[in-house]
Amino acid sequence: MSATGIDGARSLKALNTLGVDARAAGMIELVQPEQLADTAFDPRTDLVLGEGSNVLIADDVPGTVLLNRLRGRRVVEGDGDHALIEAAGGEPWHGLVRWSLDQGLCGLENLSLIPGLAGAAPMQNIGAYGVELADHLVDLDAWDWRDRQFRRFTADECRFGYRDSHFKTGEPDRYLVTAIRLRLSRRLTPRLDYPGLAAALADASVDQPTARDVSDAVIRVRRAKLPDPATIGNAGSFFRNPVVDAGLADDLRTRFDGLPVYPAGDGRAKLSAGWMIEHCGWKGHRDGDAGISEKHALVLVNHGAASGRELVELAWRVRDSVAETFGVVLENEPRIVEFPRQHD
Ligand code: FAD
Ligand code: EPU
Image (cartoon, rainbow, N blue to C red; front, side, top):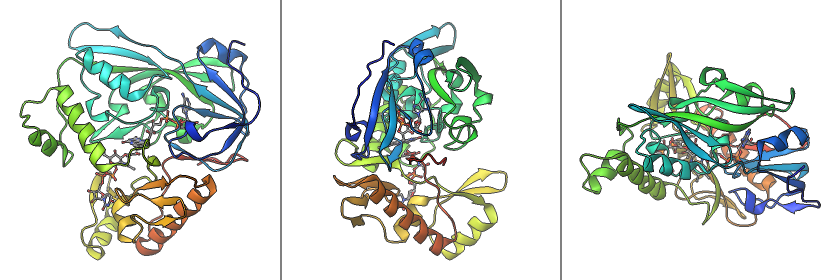
């Protein structure tokens, strides 16, 4: 095998954005899809990692961490108003977004600055500022660990939902995404519904934005709102915004003045988990090095040396207090990596 096999326990601290100092017995870098045929993977002991920006590693990894480092991106078809682009699973997502803008292609601008790699983007159908991956993904290639062959998934087969996909909850750990293909447009349809985005453009005196202007505004909004993992360990939103019956949402809104509620279709409504957590008094809270960001209440932070278990413990205390106050149980958004393996 041409992989870089590294024996002995290795720290994962620099390989997850929460900065948890867990260890792995072994590590392999995947640089060619062909390596997969010679690579063993047992989800009970092994772990696939991209950039580690959506995991909380609670335990040491008893087996091998497989780092997706497959690189390459290209315009597959580029005629007419639309283009199809392809990215290998190890391409950094934000770099892909900016490259697509350089090609004169629009669509991904609202998804600027989301950390992580392209192959992980379908796992939870990344989304921000009114756009999600599912709006652009045409299909993807994945390695099937069980049948040991490559398989192509259409967008429908990915079963995308809000922060969800077939790969996250349908058959977790069965597939490794090796490449994604996205349909983009040569014409910008600005999506500026998110409060704050239009304001950020206005602040920059932009009234006819280009896709790059929108991307720059998204970057400014994100930098203002979210803690930077380079400064303080975090994995973005730690909980999903709960989707509940609209009737329950109305009831909660009556009882809790100011609770943000967004329509979610089919008689459902989405509640702001960040607001609920702040209401319970957790914003800026700190237990040793495990904390809740003072910038954004939905973000669990590692001030330096928190262990994965300490972070999990704090997260569950937050979840329990929100459940007690609002009667709504928050679900973690990042994967909590535990051994023996338990599915989310
Ligand atoms: P990892 O954390 O390495 O992996 C995540 C999961 O996917 C793990 O279960 C892993 O085993 C699996 N996995 C990784 N790669 C593959 C693969 N190729 N094939 C199969 N399984 C794989 N997310 C949003 O949706 N919207 C946001 O606005 C957003 N903002 C964020 C802001 C910050 C500051 C941070 C730190 C995170 C944010 N996230 C956001 C979460 C995160 O960036 C995304 O979920 C991202 O797609 C994770 O990519 P990754 O490469 O880091 O995945
Ligand atoms: N809020 C508070 N206190 C806070 C933070 C937020 O009360 O400390 C309330 C405010 O009322 C605010 C509302 O929550 O208006 C919504 O906050 P924000 O706009 O920051 O969005 P979010 O719902 O907290 C979601 C995603 C983010 C994504 C943004 C923008 C989830 C779980 N999170 O956050 O995704 O970037 O919207 O679209 O859906 C991620 O997944 O890691 C992530 C960062």
